[in-house]
Image (cartoon, rainbow, N blue to C red):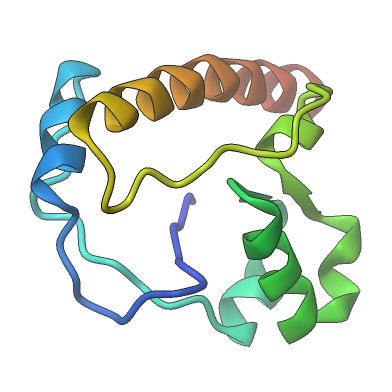
Length: 119
């Protein structure tokens, strides 16, 4: 099972229009996706936690320090020497396109790693 949760959100928010438009270009219809706030319970039940930005990873570890062995930046998890992926929220649609492209490429690597190593 895959869950998504945010470190700085409230429950029940829809994605921005720009996020919805760009996700559709990648074949993902997220117009009904609702945000969920990260909780200690979600952290504890997760086998793997992947964060976009360092501040997200820090928020996870501040809530549940023992999650350090299963919490990574997406870039870190796949061995890319980069400080994460910036959230495009509130920026131009071009920034959403850049972020989506970067996420897509990294998530392909995440998928490959998970399916070949089991984690």
